[in-house]
Length: 310
Ligand code: GLN
Image 1 (cartoon, rainbow, N blue to C red):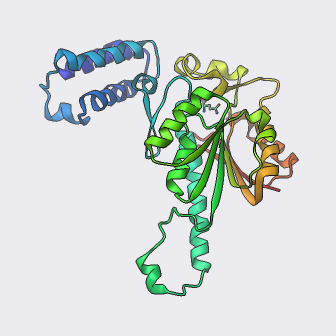
Image 2 (cartoon, rainbow, N blue to C red):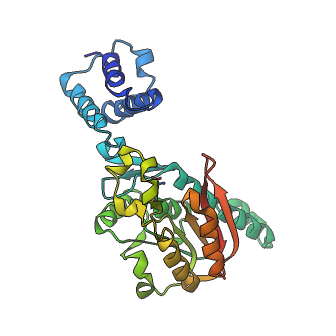
Image 3 (cartoon, rainbow, N blue to C red):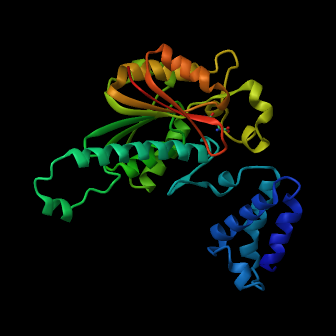
């Protein structure tokens, strides 16, 4: 069959379920994944014909997309910043908002590093010129923890961009840790993974961290109606939902743990529920955290928070 005919079938079958651009994106992602061809292939080879074997996986994907199974689970991979990650139904598919959270951290570290380079007298300007420290290298030893790591996206991105950091990551789900471990290996970073429940953290670790980051579950049951079928039916509930009666359950546990286990002036970065920005801020204030900063995501929702340990 002609490739453009397959594209036509994708649209015929899926346009009622998804926006047209999304159907296009699904189709071209399959073209890249299975045929190893660029998306402009149809422009340069409009008569490209696929063999039966080449067609088959495209139609298998199509039938799963009709069930609204997320494409990342169908293909078993997702992209996060510059990383390629394995994903399956035991981990949340990494979100663009979480990329923004990681970028915030990296920007802060770069700014800090730039300051420290400028304030350091250059004893040997020649050596400095010959061996410039890449901007993402934090000058001091640096220890960080990702709480509720899932696919490992945050921990791996940070480990990759801050090569000398000692990175710890934990999750309550053993299945998620298997995925995260494989992702760390595939992306050549060394991370210490711990099987641990956020709500029992005090028992587990006695370490001094420079930075703690977390994207814990934060969607309330009452917000379930806003969540699309592809998320609700396929992504892990334990990574998404919190009880309506205590939506900041995880944030309280993280605040208490961070108070004890962050170094002086250590920083806590959180992804948050867009409707609970002020409440999350108040919770941290009540735990004596300072310099609390809320930030919106690209969609204009309160989505991230940064604060300094008391
Ligand atoms: N941002 C995710 C969603 O809306 C939720 C992630 C989370 O609960 N940590 O689907």
